[in-house]
Image 1 (tube, helix red, strand yellow):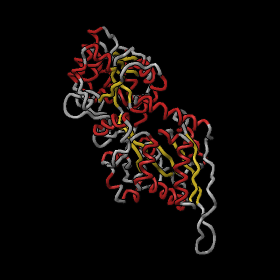
Image 2 (image 1 turned 135 degrees about the vertical axis):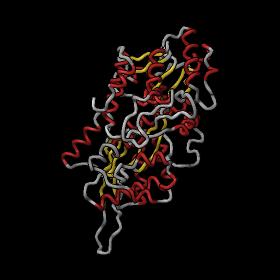
Image 3 (image 1 turned 120 degrees about the vertical axis):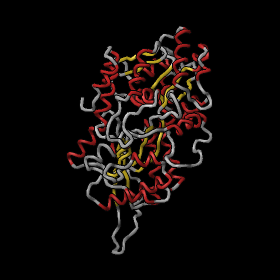
Image 4 (image 1 turned 90 degrees about the horizontal axis):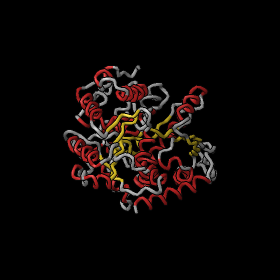
Length: 430
């Protein structure tokens, strides 16, 4: 039932989306207040947004902006929508020809570690001095702060990436005793036993580590680092720790475990499709958005998808989190920067517009609030994983290169290279 309700919602949104253009027209009446000299004040801002939930839907965004324009009629915001295939190139081109937008919606790995490093972003430290900002979770705050001390992002929402199992197949294979259905967790030993049960039942492909490219690498990273308590970087986000004993042990376990394979010919999307077609028993690239999308892509999906945290040898699992927020490009116009900050304050400090902005992402608030998905069974189920979000290390220098080095390392293991040698070769400079 939860999938049916969510599917109807998504399809209705898609219908609205198809009738809209890629730019929101300025339809607000010209009611700017006059200043002391009798002239009209009017600030024009441009917001570029990556497709974070329905922040990629012009109808949804237009509705939120209409409310903002009513309260701030002298600030007008137009929007252009980016995608992840060409969005980065558009930003680079805009930076080179001096046409960067005023506002941008994306994550710290771009706003902080990339564009912040290049000096393109305005410092938002003053936004972090508010009472509401002081309640933002510490790991989220740290991710939005550059090594220089400046804040280049103000967060809007977060999510946790997890994995999923075919509940029906686990039940048939006698593997359900190895998962905690209430907490959606399991131990490394439970994971091993579940894979043994599945293969004994006749399920040859329990799960695959896709490594054709970097897509979905948040799943393979979390799987490896959780199994024996490893990490991807040091705590200070200055270096990569792939070669730790814990990570080598985890990679060796996965390579040796019958039913788990490294597949350099598969992308994460192809691995997801295999799972949805019941060709694998588990999928290492999953989150609430994936479930919604796969419900649409696979209307014949006839088994229960059960989301799970990654198995861990001890303690609490540490899931890879996703953070999205707003940043301001420093175009040298202080009036526009202040107007852009006004928009960020409006969207994040007042509970009503903030809850609406978060719901538009289909993710979760970055500070404590009442359950904004109280009547949504799917979102309530996935909210379980918010407590397991670990360190947000994607702001470590050389991050883009490290992602490439990671999947290349997995591919080397798939081709038969000794784990110790493959790990030794790991370098963001590869």
